[in-house]
Amino acid sequence: MNNEMQEAFENLEQMRNAYFASLEFNGDIHTRVLDDKWSIAESIYHCYKLLKLTRLGLQAYLPFARPIINLVPCDNQNNDMPNIYSGKTMKAPFILIPGNVDHLEKGDLRNLLEVETRKVQNLVKNLTQKEIYCIRLPDPVPNYPNIIQGIKLLEIHERHHYEVVIERQQANR
Image (tube, rainbow, N blue to C red; front, top):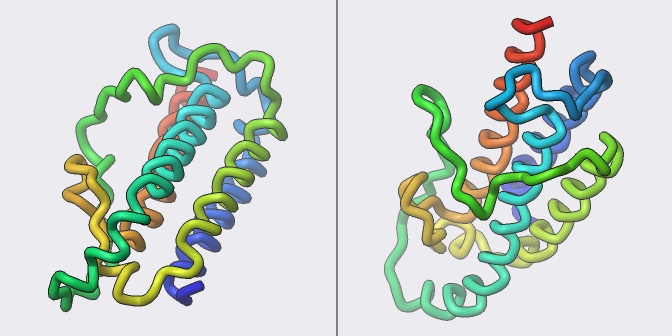
C-alpha cells in the first residue's frame, strides 16, 4: 500500500483509539442528551454507514475508473483535504441516518468500523500512485476528491461527529 495511504489509515485508527478511550465514549452511549440530536452510538453508526457506502461506491467505481485513468492526463498530486464539516452543519442524507442502535454496544460499533475499514483498505491497497491521485470520486459535496483525499475525509468526518457529541455530552451533564 502507498505510504501516504497507509498513514491516512493509521491516523484514522489513532483517532478512533483516542475517542473510544474517552470518558464520554465509556459512559452511556445510547442516550440522547438533546432529543433532536444523535447519541454517541448513533453518531458512530452514522460514521459506519458512510464508511460502508464509501466501500460499496469504490467497489462499483474502481473497475471502471482504473482503466480510464491511463487515457487522461493527470499531474495533480494534491493530497490536502480541507475540513468540509467545519462551520454550518449539514443534514445527513436519509441513507446515512442511523436508526435504532440500542442493541449495539460500544465494542460492536467499533468492530463494525474496523471490519469496514479493512474492506476499504483491501480495495485501495493495490492502487498505483497515479490512481491514488488521479481517480476522482463522484462526490460533489467535497468537490470530487481523489482516493487519498477521500480516505482522509473519512477521518475528518468521524472526528467531526465525535467532537460534536463529546461537546454536547459535556455541555449537558
